[in-house]
Length: 110
Length: 113
Image 1 (cartoon, rainbow over the protein chains, first blue to last red):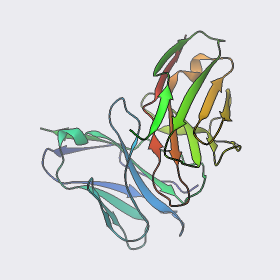
Image 2: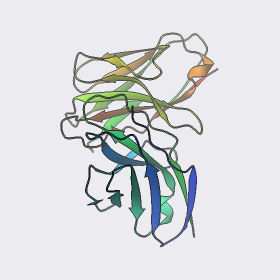
Image 3: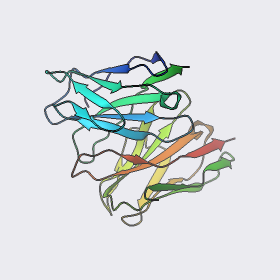
Image 4: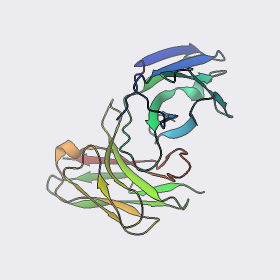
């Protein structure tokens, strides 16, 4: 299974942009890049996903490197409610054994 | 509200007791999953079900059994609980055809003493 690597933790000031990196050097051509976040005492929540092109939705933006070996989740204006653990996973579709790593714990400073 | 519903939310078991964690989804998803999350750790896949009538082992299946009762429901059973199974259990569902995200339940916090 292709793996992802993320920093253990990051900090951001409130109302500033946050760039959360993810490395996935062994990504295959059929792998989609998915991001989830997990708020304290809750289940993970889907944030965004993409294949090759950058993607935007109401929650965030996803920037994918041209060689697809890395990606960045962008929160345009961090709020205190964005403090969570962010997971980057690869998913080819179907019923794979996808395991979430430890993710990046984002702390937002007022 | 549409989503994944897990019951119970909290449970304390004694070593050796058995119990079943229930999960139901109302999004007409084909695939369902059971994960466990230990303190400070990521989520590890226990079992998954690609579709009604099929189940497969994930990363950490030992000590667990599952049943895909119908398209909506996927249960996880602990036959003889052990302290090592103290964890938070999450059920999730997805539709594999469109590669969209998983939808997770709110979790069951299980303590085995």
